[in-house]
Length: 377
Ligand SMILES: Cc1cc2nc3c(=O)[nH]c(=O)nc-3n(C[C@H](O)[C@H](O)[C@H](O)COP(=O)(O)O)c2cc1C
Image 1 (cartoon, rainbow, N blue to C red):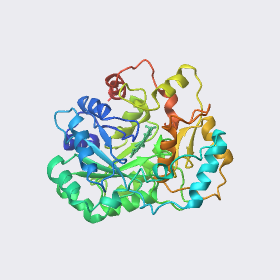
Image 2 (image 1 turned 90 degrees about the horizontal axis):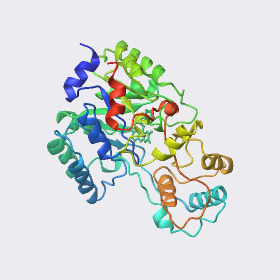
Image 3 (image 1 turned 30 degrees about the vertical axis):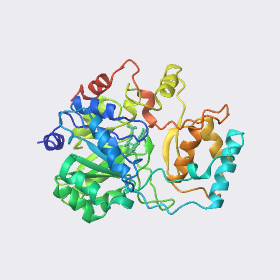
């Protein structure tokens, strides 16, 4: 039996297609569509603050809206990065100066409290929240819980696995795959350099990253699993640049358990962000390059290289300390939603993968896009 057939049986899927969780962009309605078409809909919940009691209420109301027959057929996606300590006055000053220069307006009269709070609390901060863990392991029992930017403690992983929940973690390098193989996760999401959105690496030392393509990372990870007798125990799920059925088939024929796709759904009706911008790029055949940039959020993310992004790169001095991830990203998001900000620059942060140019605009429903991915299987 091929890896993908066993994978689908285990998770109750018709097709081994995972909709990428896309925080701030994908919706519960998109996840509903994907699951109802036979794939696995993912719910990104990295912006929910589970250190407050509101967090669990927010999650439950999201699950309420997840309009599928079996609500456990889902992938709940957490961010599991290093815990952020706070922000310094110098970091705030540098941020204001940078944005004032890039936008050519004074952005200095905004409330610091609202801007400089952490908008992405790491799972590590609430991994001992018993109410949440009980809800996940005893009530919802999602098919999968996935982690980006790192992984929780072995104890937490074992708790989830004992409840029948599969644990997946993103890898971007062979070294990360080795760590995850030893840790005993159920699935490794092999995120190549092409991928849109944030790079989920957890080895963060500078100059470490080999920037492997999805294919190279997948093949290296596969070789590692074979050499260490882990091939039958761990699912490999390539993600990054996969936009059509032939590529999906290629990976499944090469022993991937499933594929995870994000950018291909960015023109779906159920997408909130990026959509009209992407459509206008495609309609005008203006295939702007993408770039990995860490100045907007504090972690590297692949986005369209707009004038705004060029401005940030131009005016940012690498030696200038900016607020850490979570706080930096929240400051950007708060600025973007500030209706009184007067600038002619489009300050959208258009996260998408290198292969966005392959988007087929004639496919107007999620069902059609999904069908285009499975037609050769
Ligand atoms: C807009 C956008 C937001 C993303 N947000 C998340 C996220 O919240 N969690 C996550 O694990 N991956 C996230 N990703 C990365 C995806 O999981 C996946 O690696 C990527 O979409 C694959 O590349 P592709 O976009 O070329 O298909 C995001 C990707 C995009 C395009």
